[in-house]
Image (cartoon, rainbow, N blue to C red; front, side, top):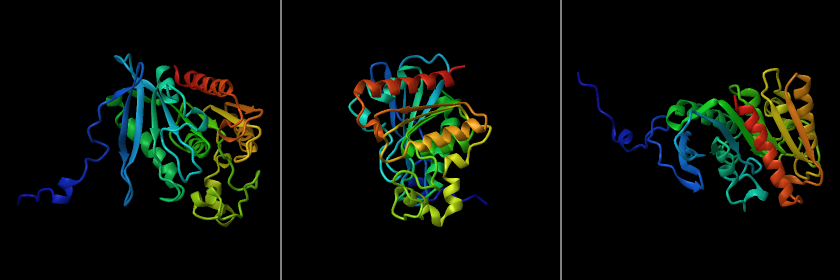
Length: 294
């Protein structure tokens, strides 16, 4: 008996991201090309999740190390290609600058809190890394040399990926929340209206087990990769104690961690000069180079 052929539904569906053709790369900056809007995962009843991939132009000399960038936006908004308030006017863009140092840079979507609650956004980052590994030969990347880099809410998710996902080469975390269980600054775990509560699907105090699973300070172990934690000492949105506590937990576990608290800086490097923001970026990129270079 001849097996039934594909249905019309099968025929009209877009190819699955695991084997869909890759889009062509276009010039994005001198010496840098970008693939934009590459689907990496499908979600049940939701939008396809996409990433942008930046890489140096020219013949490859071997698989490139990877920076996996995770955007901020209080887990509720944000764009995958936005490194924050103080870099939006940069030309070349920050991702082009990272690529020019010999990296591939994947800027990834994840489900926001209005779409799905934790652990959905962390699952999405793991799915992105899985897809990048699956397609690594075509993309010319080496995901065994991945540095995850996140800012604000993206720093929180990047920390969790580094602490609970496959082994990474390093993590660059800018002003990321690390503890959803304790009152810090203006945050209260009893408040159901905070961005943290929306991300969890409940006030942290009402879902203590989930809040602990979503707290990087509670997920630290001896296998943690090297961390660079950078935080403004005058941060009015995510108290600087978040990075201090995470650094202390990593040190106690025997981890490799650099903590840099920046005097005069509010969230998103507000109140800093352009030169100072450039210094933070340059030092962060140098950390990524050291950790991803054999």
